[in-house]
Amino acid sequence: MCISSMLRRILIPIGYFLVVAAVVLITVGLVAYGQGIEYDFKTGRIIHTGLVIIQSSPSSVPVSLNGKTTKKKTSYRASFEAGDYTFELAKDGYYTWKKTLKVVSSEVTLAQYVLMVPRHPNTTTLDTKTQIVAQSISKDHRHVAYATGGPEAAVYTLDLGNPKPVKIYSAKVATPEQPAETLLDVTWNDDASKLLVASQNGPTATHHLMNADGASAVNLTQQYGFNFTGLKFNPANGQQLYWVSPDGLRRLDVGAQSVSAVLADKVTGFQMAPDRVLYVQTTELGHSLWSLDGRGHKQELIQALPESDTYAMAFTTYRGTEELAIVPSKTRVGTLYSDIYGTNPVAKTIARDVSEAAFAADGHLLTFSSATNLVTYDLELSTLTGKLVTYHASGIHDLAAVTWFDNFHLLANEGGHLMLMEYDGANGTDLGALTGTFPAYATADARSIVALRPVGSGVGYTQITIKP
Image (cartoon, rainbow, N blue to C red; front, side, top):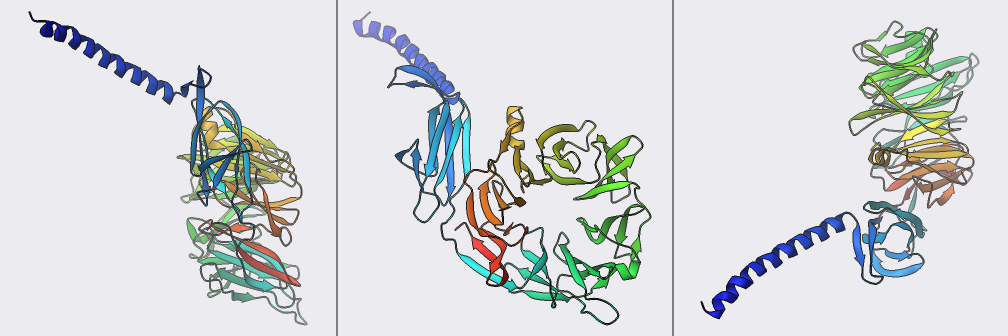
């Protein structure tokens, strides 16, 4: 046998062994890397890392880490040993964003919500009036309706895609027989085709239903002879409205021109869900939550609720599960009930000393708030970790109203000023004075804010552009 043939017989198995060993080592390395295990060549030790991803609007913003400038810009992606790291984004013409993020080994810390707020946002005045007494924004955030006070009280609408105020209703002026009509409230139905206008004419409360352009106005109080205080549209049918009469929960069907018999008695509060009514009923055993669908079918959802005269409620569906937030006015404890239509609803106590609740549009965040408290519950992270994940905003005072700007940012009327902040209260920016206790709203594209602000000697609706 020649030497070359012997070498081949020896080297081929060795080659196969080296290839297999290399594949095994690479596989182990990739698995370790995927689990956040790396070798630090500087320190000569194995470390557990986590991944940080930061995305911003606008993008390509320089990133600083722990006070030191890096050469990287957003979108930013880097691995770090577990611990706390302070990131800062700075760009000319914008307020600086700064936040400490906690890196957990083998996990991704994702801050895709960074909003760089312009120092001098483009501002447009849409309308000015002497006094605004009520306002409402449509579900699609494309239309605003508002009622004015004073001698020329009226109801106006604004189409935010083509903002030009349109008067759709004028309040009745005083006569020798009766005082002037005072406007109290205005509400859109879900598809923004109709408006409900509440007013006071002496001792009489009146409700008008009209088309969005003011046509086909009907005096519901006069036609049906009921006091419709608390009347709410059925989201699934704009011709139907519900309210709690002295006898109990009833339905007004404008299309059929009828008022139902009492659907449920001893009702202390209700909330419209997309295809049904959720209501609280008082019985000899206490307070319970019920569901009533369009076919009249009733279902008890929660047998025992805390005793209270009224309840604030917010409803959403998140990842196929119905979620209901309830705040009894007596206890001021915010509770989230999950899977309320299932056989075993799960209750979680989220916040105390609160009075209101509101879900982000996609349902993954929930705020509970009061004048001095703002708590956000993270449904997504709580589900992933199996722990209750909440964020408590610090320094809150005189909080009059909270709405969602997008799925990660809040608009707050705090002390008469418009504050734009992240879901956890971080990076709050004061965007100027507001009028009264009215909330501000995001436009449909979540790029601008519509807010009622002081203008000269009166007030005006202002559109503030935040995102490019």
